[in-house]
Image (cartoon, rainbow over all chains, first blue to last red):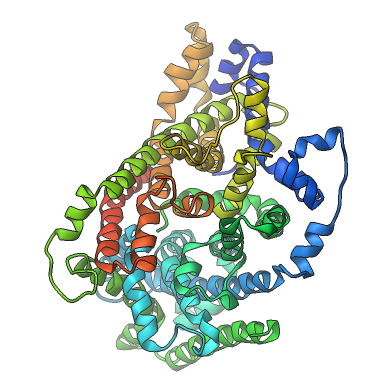
Length: 302
Length: 313
């Protein structure tokens, strides 16, 4: 599945034909209307984030047309001031990086075992792992939190400041889908390649590290991007397992809290929101191709 | 913790993890015999089994058990928690809201996505146009909620400016039930329409051109082409998109929490689960709500997976 157009089709597509009949002008107008409706909210917030506090609180962002006044103060405030979000920005990275690397490494190993190793009940176990995708995150949360507390992994005195609960949860939740997707990619590698390596006397560990890992890099990258965006954008896991401790909360939690109070710092939300959007937008725009590819398969994730 | 300490912690966990994996691989790398392969498979799968067992299977079973216990996990109460969900007035409200979300979000998002995909197909601006509508998919639902909070704002929101200019007056969009649920739903439609556009667009491009040509020779065009050729040809993909959005919708909680905090009768199942379990400490009821989400999601996922197999390869 790809979004890149193939220029080979001189023949009209069905959609193109429909559009021509509707009249290109009307079709374009309708498309433009949807595009504008979809862009205005984001554009509005973007403009708002550069307006002075007083303007934000008293007038709409479109008044900049007649009364333009812009400032970087909001960004200064959320990056260094009293309401600084930089700590949460760091937390988001500290949460996300291990929560991407760990499940993907584990899943690649498991996918290799399911694809190329022989052991009893292989198919049954694989189907079981695949089936775990249907378990919604919510179903696991109450007992998991209790378990973390009993193990001493939650709370302020916990090892790693309590980050372990969030890392482990994200890792577990990512596994079923990661294994399934990587297994699919793994099967596309020709079996003769693995077989001939075996005949040459290579063991599984060698084949895995020297042959399969390099071949799997694009697939691993594709899943890594999906996982990165899920974890970076997550609110629920961080809220529940972070135990409300702002010391380890990511940006999403900080912004959600700021939004709930609607106090004096309301005007900072616009700049704060944009700070949180920058990273996923960069990832998305630069790696769009990979993202779309994994998207459909990832749509049923728990 | 300071920034440095946090980064060190992240580094430690990753290093620790790779050390464990390296040890496992090294210990098992020398085995070649048949029983050796068994040990090796076990080693490759061990981390998966541990994480899935502890992180998913045990808690899921435990939650099902807890849903039949009272809120302090002291007594068996049979189906009482479930009875509460279907009899308590506030919780019935939650169910009705959830139903509205599950019906409206998939249909509206898929409809907009389909129309938009057809409209921009093979046009000059296709790539940019699709990226534009797809962008909300990349950002967090918290971010999306904030964006729309500014749209719905009583004093400075653009929606009130527009309705006032049209002579429809100003409104408290997020305060008045049941309309406020509709305005929350719009946020999620805004997010999901891009997903529908991108997936459906790929499927529209895959319609064989000879079918289109044949239809044209028969004089089919315009809306008829859309209705009798385009839509039937991409039916399986349409179902996959609808079901995928349904699943996500059943589990969405961020929007309600960020925009209204569940106030003004806007709560949905996934949000109520969070409140009952972790705010009100009604763990039995929370578990029952989680199991209900599970029960609702399961058939849709199974149907989705079956349909997906038809679409992908």
